Image (cartoon, rainbow, N blue to C red):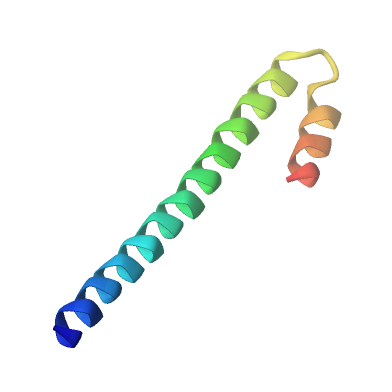
Length: 59
């Protein structure tokens, strides 16, 4: 019985770790998307070069 409980807690811990890593990955992907959108907006504007430098430094 104790071994079953240990196995269950191990699986649950691994699942938490897995979801945490997915959250981290999702956050990085979201930051990349935001960065690329900001850069494309900045490059299409008249003062594009300065704005893209600022947006890159912001991240």
